[in-house]
Image 1 (cartoon, helix red, strand yellow):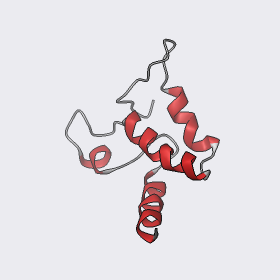
Image 2 (cartoon, one colour; image 1 turned 60 degrees about the horizontal axis):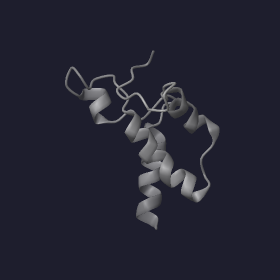
Image 3 (tube, helix red, strand yellow; image 1 turned 120 degrees about the vertical axis):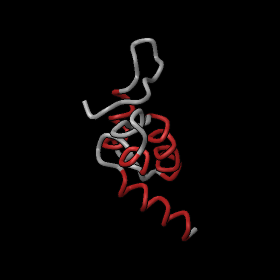
Length: 79
């Protein structure tokens, strides 16, 4: 359990209010640098939701990436 909490704490530090700022976001190739990946945010939210420790602050960027057809856009930048 202690290892899982450490991982969640690390992910919480990477969440900047828009998405996860991981190594690919910071230092990735041209197509990855500065780009948030929606699936990474969703995978972060899954254990938060399962444990009841999430809040709307984390969900809002995910819902903003949902299109009118119900699908989700990936590869979002800060704008």
